[in-house]
Image (cartoon, rainbow, N blue to C red; front, top):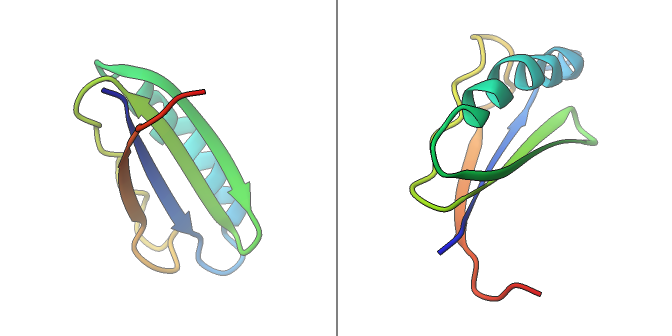
Length: 86
């Protein structure tokens, strides 16, 4: 069974580039080192948002918390189960 874990965060005003840099330099290496990881991707979106999607063969590992003051609100997290692959 493959699980997709999504992590989405909105940066505090004017700190989108810092949040993206933190995700690239801290969150990605932390997730990449975890057992059961199949794939991980990092995205940006309008509104100073950063999205990390990781595919897991086992229990998803959590994304570390960004530094205080970097976020406009707490990060959102969702886990999905793959039901069909094409």
